[in-house]
Length: 212
Image 1 (spheres, rainbow, N blue to C red):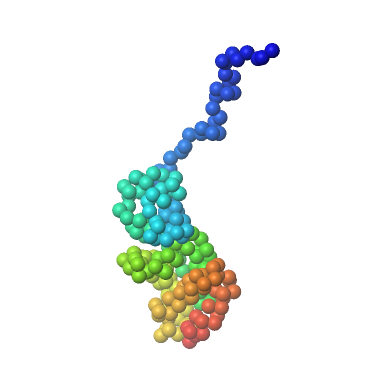
Image 2 (cartoon, rainbow, N blue to C red):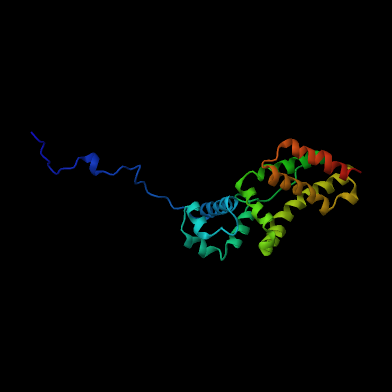
């Protein structure tokens, strides 16, 4: 005998699953800004500056594109803000105090090499390799992000001069640029830069160059 259809719905069927319909928590303030910054650098690292758009960043950040349009005029403005951020971006670099020039250089360049493995570090690559296409953005990144980091290296070299560990005439901004450039070049050519390569840059290039 066929079973009658009563039209009644059981309690389990009528009640939606709380796991499937949990309320969405909207991020605001600093939390939202950090999510946008991280999404911007992740998207830039995965694509290129030409492909970067608010429409692509917004879903990755879990927000609407109108939020981005209200806060930043262009993607270039957003990229610069993200890179300068102390948490999501490259942040503020502080000088170590290991007591030796070698120790300071190893600390800073190893940290830089590891940073280049992260999305926020990889986001620098398209800006560096596509410099002729976006000279204004590159100049801003250079002035507001790269040079402040490079100045920390120079400060370590000048401190080493005071200790008698480096020649004063060789502790220059040009010398401070050598280590990061070699690390970036190695990263572009081979991918992650191993610790032994960082040591080679310090021991075979920088220390002999700076020797008093």
